[in-house]
Length: 117
Length: 113
Image 1 (cartoon, rainbow over the protein chains, first blue to last red):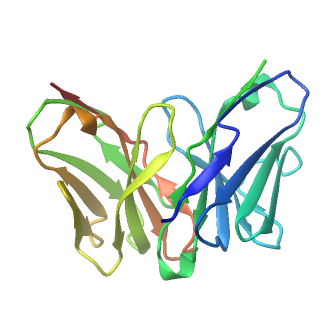
Image 2: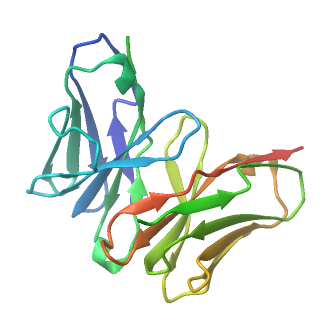
Image 3: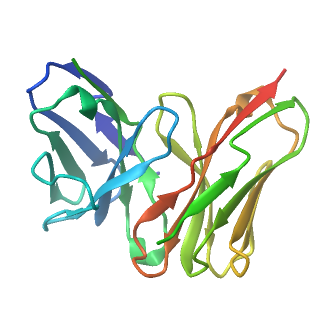
């Protein structure tokens, strides 16, 4: 149980285009989903936290107009990188929590490798 | 602000050895602590989760301990195997937010056959 999927697993795009990444909790309802970014040989950095049906909370330094997050249902969150540039190339990982208040932890997706040319 | 540190950054051991990975955190007011494994280019696999009221958790050859007062956790791997080679990440959820994971920088483990 507690499987989280991401789609696509890998995407290459031209500079200036927008890219949408989906995160789904397959066998549980996620009250909260998180989006992380990981640069090579570095740890995960939290970008934003989203609760179903409400606006995402962004970490300091993360541009909310550039990284659009939608958490429309209890099983799906999307991250759209708008007008992507080469510096946005990174490994994006989502996680989902069935109920953070119960301390069940977070379950992570397999990640999406974004390369902006 | 919570800070999580992992030592060593990299570790190479021969197959069969027992080993310990260390994690320390600056704010002892944590909700829980999780150990993850990450293979190259992959997502994270949760290994063990320790609630703040617990002292340790065990799963197979893995044992994680937690000492909240000193801000430390260890991950003990018994009888290491080449398949254990990966990066091991420690992460804590602080009591204040009870939602955000703060990650350490990880320990890259290589088990030599």
